[in-house]
Image (cartoon, rainbow, N blue to C red; front, side, top):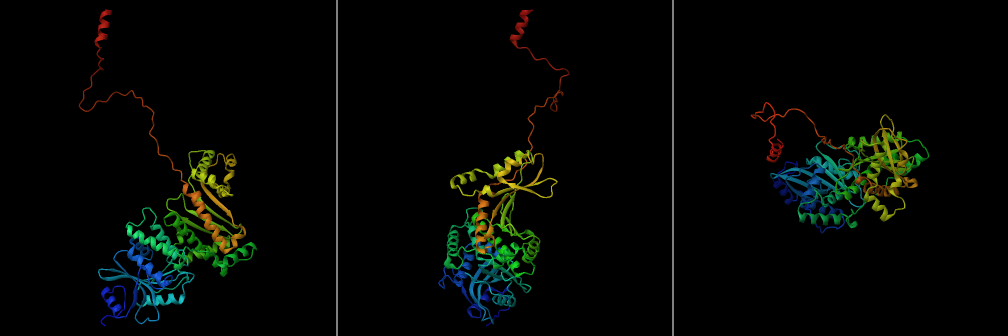
Length: 489
């Protein structure tokens, strides 16, 4: 054998194929419809990798997330065994080839169902990646993280030149669903649309090991901390239950964003911008803030929405708040501004929905208006139903900022790990679907050209080259007028 595997990236693809033929590297080509172990990880891996080669837009989405080149030829394999690593079979391998050479590569560790990642397996993959100069490791499971650069296993020390990514099946399914929406991000080729539809149907089938499952319940620490806050027990930063509470919230934040993305056909961003890409800094911040006030909060960003959606879960009041900011008219009185807000909230779509469905509790009964006035330190809040009564109280004051807040009392369900998730994931699409999506910020109207007629006694200015008379000429008389004057004489 003339070729030995030392470094994968930079290697000639023909040499790689020779190692495969000589059984130095063991692998199986990924197929869209695999005949091996249907519903098992092997089948799921094969379908996922095959889809990358068959649907252009989906391939660009996935490769973009893990930082791999989107151009070049893509080769995908399953059940890969590298030289001198016979005891470590890799679930998947992606090669990006350009000019006949491997330009980038990634090895994949796949889990489905309730199976979670195992540290020792990932550690073996890291060793293989470091040994053969493979720059990317991608883990996929039903476990959630806030960012693809994070791992469900927590912070890990990775050798230089190797990057570790994690994708949840919910995230992958969301990217696929978004591509099937009829908008400017959809798949162009009709045949590829059909392939994507079949793949999504498979992923959403419970037998696939993925299904429509999302983050279904908070970790046990959520209930423990809820009870400690209720009893006013002392909380410590090193408390493992507090860490579980923060981690649960970050996972639920991601799940809410992905589920809303599927409904809207566009990716909803989640988390605090300053901490994106640095999960440990976010966790540290949230732990410190919780010790000051027992509250967890998040921000969801929906493109073209009136503002980001702020979400706040309060352990003391056992309530969840969702709010958006809205720019209100600056050329109206308080009464006019309140009327404008009412017109925004009670839109024709909401009125029709309330008439047709007649819910026991209208969302208007759970809405609040929050106003920050000029020169005031804190905002003032009142029930939406009391808006008319507030006009006289705030007359003459200048509103600096306005927010529409949806407040729901969870009560005893707040501490229930499963019920909490169920309730908040009903609350978000309701608030967005009935209120947020119809809101528009006020914009200052463009200045108008004055319609007043200008009066001027200034002399007429001649065109260049035109001679003006020294004195204005009299208008000639008409023939009839001249005849009349003559007869008088």
